Image 1 (cartoon, rainbow, N blue to C red):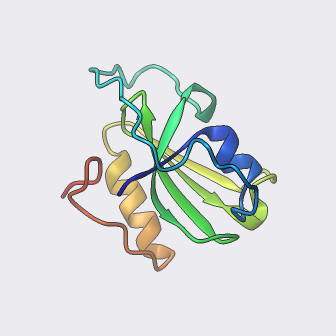
Image 2: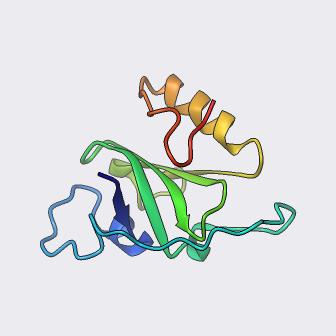
Length: 118
């Protein structure tokens, strides 16, 4: 089952200790659309994320679900409120970059899901 989280949920709850996680574990219709990757994009533009990996207090790996584009975010949850606590990957090579980065971190991200593909 996929897990979906809002940006606020991810940033405010790095240890998953807050009660009432109302935006998790529900299906959120995506806005599947062609995307012009020459446009700038930031985490503030994402309404809902699909969680690909999560270790409480450790590392989270997410992909933009609303809108559905190749925009990935890795959170280093202990440092989530610091300058280098969030790393993003955007564009048509983002999937290769995030797979490479998660491999460096020793994480095995499922391949051939809705977003990550070989």
